Amino acid sequence: MKVEHHCVGQVATNCYFMINEETKEALVIDPGDSAQMLAEKLNQKGWKPQAVLLTHGHFDHAMAAKELAEMFGIEIYAHEREKDTLEDPRKNVSIMVGNKDNYRADVYVKDGEVLELAGMEVKVLHTPGHTEGGCCYYLEKEKILFSGDTLFCQSVGRTDFPGGSMSKIVRSIKEKLMALPDEVKVYPGHMGMTTIGSERVRNPYL
Image (cartoon, rainbow, N blue to C red; front, side, top):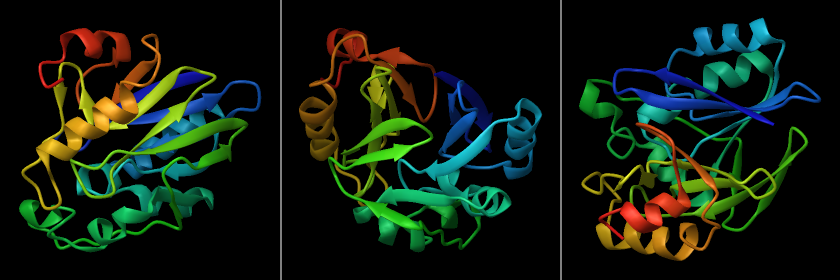
């Protein structure tokens, strides 16, 4: 298995490809912009996207999801509590950059649900606090976590947007993410990679 990172959009959002190197199937996590560029990268490598996974519904994570999904005929996944955020320009904060966008998911998932996609098992961890329906995607066998804007390297996501709560995000991290093994690699929505073990020791919010 392989993770490839692309930085997209005006606020430097991390979009990830999670690739099954045996089958060349791939998952696309948080395509926040540059759908055409992301599609070209996938096609150049011969990777076959199977789904788009959204950690939450803010514009900088969801803006290119529809276009990319339509290009490859695949579905968009998000947590069931995130529907309102995706659809409301105030909650998805696209209005802050002069747009009134609404987004969608094709499949709304539940906390603890295990998705079988691209030959991988992906567990949904509902981690409210940045948004009401924010979630992380955990691949237990690969020891990989896509944390969106819940957990960053020595920081946590903003909680001053609609639906945000500092108490909820800290509780989400402590109860859901700090329960994972130290060696789990964390791929966040912004900035660099970290590990659960490192955050357990160094994150000042915990």
